[in-house]
Length: 244
Ligand code: IPE
Ligand code: IPE
Ligand code: MG
Image 1 (cartoon, rainbow, N blue to C red):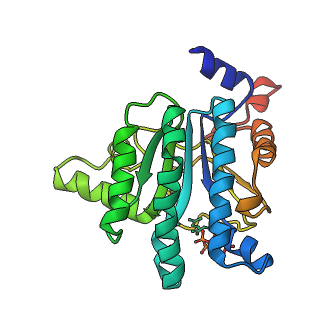
Image 2 (image 1 turned 90 degrees about the vertical axis):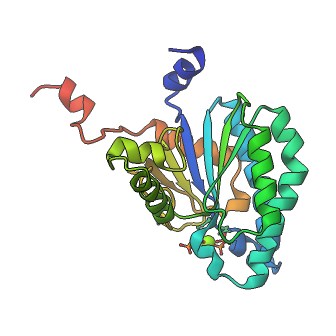
């Protein structure tokens, strides 16, 4: 086992963390600020979680930034979010690239303005060979879209639809499924995030609003994860080891 994965296993750390970054709007409303101010602070929270993942040698982080259903929000908020991803990426790109982060944007490009698509494509292309943290940003993403898109591409090429061909055709591939799924904002639902890939992820719900989530909050989620027994349908390891 390579040294980094051995260290991760010894500390019972996940190899892949997925996060539904929820609560930006409420964070702003509580402060009588426009919702967009919450989304901006959400970018700062993401920056600190990225750094914490790098320090802990976590290889993959996947975040939900804009869902297929978020198009139902007021036009001004959508415009603000589209602008924010462009501005944040332009501002942070050099630092992310220097740290060897590989950026990927998962989701449909349909409906996105060409200017937004270009920024996402350029960032993906420029960081494609980076050896560090894989940061998957789910943007205009829906789990149902992902499944339909994968199945349609398999059908179009005449490939059999099996669990492994689907796994390989889904947008997250070749990353492994998330070990730990965190959702902030005190909501206990998936909201159409990684429906296939989270079949056996450990779920952790935080009452914190996303802009308030930081390295210490991540540590709490990781401690909770480390204490869990993942059985994948098997009987408990303790029960197997004990008297029958
Ligand atoms: C999550 O925060 C970010 C996006 C969905 C873009 P919200 O904007 O959903 O924040 P709340 O849930 O309204 O507080
Ligand atoms: C999920 O949050 C989507 C993102 C965090 C990008 P929402 O705020 O859109 O989810 P619901 O509407 O509360 O289920
Ligand atoms: Mg929300």
